[in-house]
Length: 126
Image (cartoon, rainbow, N blue to C red; front, side, top):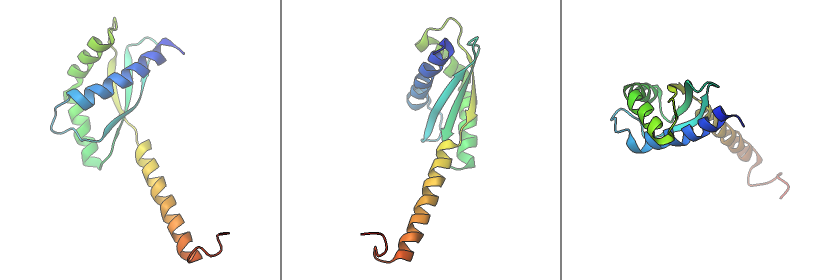
């Protein structure tokens, strides 16, 4: 495992703590997750993959709140991780959790239709 991978893993934990515990921006949605952090080999840039549970307005509000708090977030990461040089953090929205929820909904819908067609458990091998 490369150093940039280890730094990214630790940064994901630290960034999650900062967003959950320290950001007091009223525009920040409640359901924000840091899915992962990818750090460049020279440790100068970090790409934080953020998932927001909500609509497009929630994502826009989250983006604005993170941009306003960018300096604070970078400074906190520097203090907590004790890096010689704190990477510049870029926030990237990740839609994988939303896609997973949608896939689960579709699966439940198909299962529900199959259950309706089969009746009271007949034909299911029970």
